[in-house]
Amino acid sequence: MKQIEDKNLTPRQIVEALDKYIVGQKEAKRSVAISLRNRWRRLNSDEEIREEIIPNNILMIGPTGVGKTEIARRLAKLAHAPFIKVEASKFTEVGYVGRDVESMIRDLVDISVNMVKQEMQERVKEKAVKIVEERILDTLIPPVRKKQTTSSGFQAEDEFDPGNASDAELNERTRERFREKLKNGELDDRKIEIEVSAKKKPMMQVFGPQGVEEMGINLQDMLGNLTRGGKKVKRTLPIKEARELLLEEESEKLIDHEAAIQEALDRVQNQGIVFIDEIDKVADSGSGSGMKSGADVSRQGVQRDLLPIVEGSTVSTRNGLVKTDHILFIGSGAFHFSKPSDLIPELQGRFPIRVELDSLTEDDFIDILTKPKNALTKQYQAMLASEGVNIEFTEDAIREIAKIAAQVNDQVENIGARRLHTILSSLLEELLYAVPDDISSGEITIDKEYVDKQLQDLATDKDLSHYIL
Image (cartoon, rainbow, N blue to C red; front, side, top):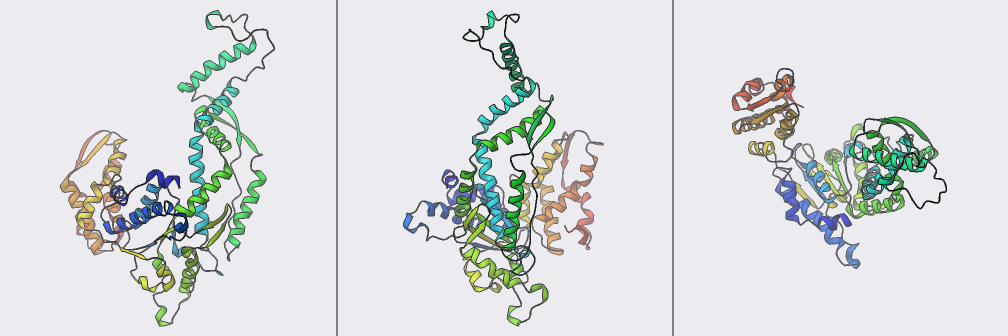
């Protein structure tokens, strides 16, 4: 819970942070901001009532490409919370071949364990760096066993006489010189032979009825334990690469793995976020007619299996038992061919917060191209700047790109902001091909005339199907 307490973001601050990456969708941002803040409120509430406070799961409704997934992903990053995105259509009910719904919690635990271990490795990094430095020096200048002497220590620098110095003293002084070179990066390209733990582990995953998948994970652990820790391999690498491998290995040794697992489980249970995409695909739109096709046979079954997970149950994972009572679930779907009311009533009740996301307009596209930190125009500018070419987009060019994107979405199929990827790719294709062979440096301005020239066919051709992503 330290992560939540460290951040301690208010709902308004959370919305402001989301605004840096996501355009519009104020209602959705407000809902997720309140849900995230409620977690902090629960953890700081009276212990007697704390366990009774359940999260308000959210159901996001809206077409593709309007920011549903991005909102959930950015929310998890803000909270430093374990986050997983799953697609409801990939799961099957018990008795069918495929993934069972509990696997999403097992995957979330694995993500959390890796997250916590990385944080712990950062804490011990300084100590690990010193150990790695000694290991590299031992390879370059093997230490000499010191002999018993009557001297209380090494000679002072100004009194040092190489002719009378012992092997241990010469060795130590050589090591110190090499230590300075290591720190200065002078030896980064020099190759050394190191011995590191073998990384390869047998991979096995079994799909099938409930419990068999878990058995597959346990088999993987058992087989992995046969080779873990004992097998070493020798590799010859430049010191720069060897340092990274050794640092990872030494950091792994220094952390408390049991404490990491316990913290990871605790974090999943109190901070975990599961984003269930395409939940509308398991909604049975024809349930009222009493007709079922072969492809739809497991839809309600998936909903029934999903219900106890969202409602609150205990899931067995390879790292221990996990209670899902306080995990935040965010459902998402376009609901073009079905309605939220087509979900079974019990599941509907577990997503009390309904948020409808708006389709993106031409003005939204303009904001998407200019305002977010990771705007597509900024991404292309950064890529071409790496080749020494600086490009600038005029306001008229941005507006024309947004206009064409809105037109194509309206005439073909509305795929939201993803349409901008197609438009900009077509717009800059010729330029990206010419750099650096024909254009090695310079300033290039993308104006409305350039946009009209490059996208003329796309803007006028009625048959736009080959431009769909």
